[in-house]
Image (cartoon, rainbow, N blue to C red; front, side, top):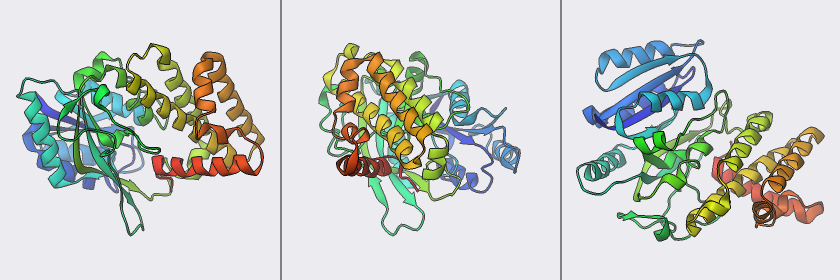
Length: 339
């Protein structure tokens, strides 16, 4: 059994996947690198995956499947994982070597110790093309450092500070037990990955290292704003799925519930912002339908989302409404790193 399984969803990723894989190889025999070729047909992604499996037997595994989208590639990684812990690294991203050592050392400590760790959280760096200063998402204000803790020990998440897929490593069995399965052919499912398992996470550990390097800058990237507007239906679908997972009134822990509501708020805001910025009547109607969906589903949740700091600006007319919408947009930029 491996210490850590790392799934790399690859779709026509030949131009950059080597950089990603090479950054993970120093994990050695303790790490399993699952290179998931998601039906790539336009380049040598499949051949590169096979090459690494040949050259690094026992460390790299090539998994080939029909195209199912990013979520199905993550699902395939989880289905095939033999590691005690599970991480997703996108094929155009990479990890920092010193931080990688610290991450493996921490996981090792829990595997060979007496305490169970459900989720390890570390920082990530926005590697934005052309940016002189690299923005780091850290959690120093929100989480106790270098100790095992639970939701009751969580401090305050400031506006725009969220645990994203880049930040987390889960215990593999926890993901299987909570029934995580991401939808096929849908973008933005990484939000489900860091939301649906949360009520099943009892113990956490925050390692204050800049582990994950999140590349932003490709024109075809899913977080390109114009591409997001074009895929607004997928953003809306993911948001509705997240709204449907849990009845917030049944989430017992107050801090967990607060965090999950805040996450739903940013999802509602991003969906609304995309509709507003598209400037089409069709998308504005979809925005209205989404808010009505929440209202019918859970009136208390609707009121919290609608009249939260960011939610207010998504439905206000005139200059004042646009100002708050703009504030929401800036938070959204921070969240997704729009390019």
